[in-house]
Length: 340
Image (cartoon, rainbow, N blue to C red; front, side, top):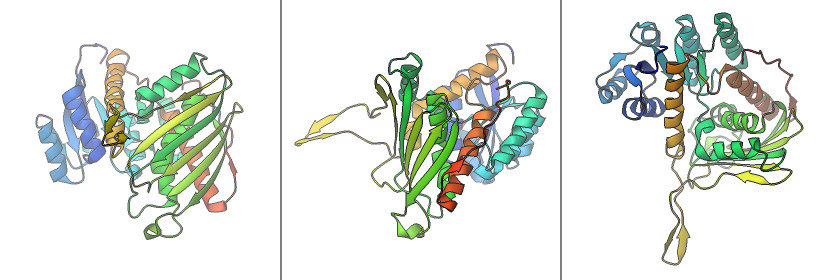
């Protein structure tokens, strides 16, 4: 895979909404990639996505797909509980892997992935924190890095969904949604999370009175910055993610992503996206293209890595404990390996 002109044969594990989108993007929009295999426990769903990708080979066993010699790299978009095991199998086969968040369901499982990758002595794993590729988030990051807003002192993030999964729990909201925002705070501020405190409310009794579908997370960062995150998975009006970073000399703020403001019938309106696949459509494409480019040119991914997945899970677990205890939770300082 050292030649930049070589086509990377990709196997996609998971053919649902996320995996199907990734497979179609790889097939239709990503230069240097070819979808050669699709796996899903639902064989009919795998067959449908494979047919859209020039009749890629169909699997119902992920390990068989990973072991297949014609597969160069693997994209994992299966249920969260399967991620760690599939990533570890990719490492055993020494195949590049892009794993959707979360990297694992526990930090302990993610730590096993770190150990396996360190033993191999090179990076194989990228985690699907796609906000790193969203033009608006990248613009905020550049404003910070170039000093336009001075020293960043406060991160403010908001993350709203139309409706939650019907059987969700407060903890699953953290690992399924808030984990993106925890990673964003780390990435944009360039600091690690030292303390978390979560408060919440139930706005949809149908979920069960103990489910906090609205959560406010307060963070203390290692460099002295502060952060607040609002996650509301029952906002009803649309899907919206944004961030503002306040600095000592200004602020950097993401804006609306709709292409136009419409003036009509005595109103000024702007469309709001329905879900994350719409909001981050360009980010997903850019993420995949850069992943393929990194494999072609250096054989190692350059995006969010195993350490990012692990530390975000540590923060997520602290948030879950804060929900249970009603108290702030400190995170133990972690020694980041020089490898990362």
